[in-house]
Length: 131
Image (cartoon, rainbow, N blue to C red; front, side):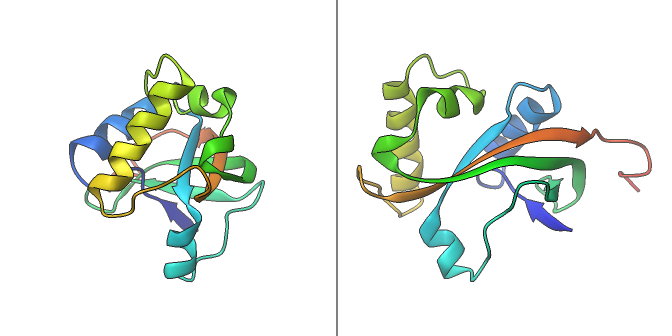
């Protein structure tokens, strides 16, 4: 089973994972260039991924429900809102994602290709997952 690591290690990943576990986060967005760089194939509808914590341990399983490629400037409010991070508008989502990607050394523009994933929580954490 492949893994899903949201955000960057630390407080951000903890916050994003908590949103998934609470059912508020059902989407995420990545840079297509990262898939190319890591020679990683795109996720596919029906694929199950282990949601990993900061230590690389699984905390839950999610199932991919949608995979779409879109330039940064074409991401919809429906997708942005499904990320569940509290953005109040598409403009706020764009500004936050621009800051995030610039901070990790990969600034984006309106034409930057993105991978937009939608997912659902299928297996919440259990005692056996934590061993």
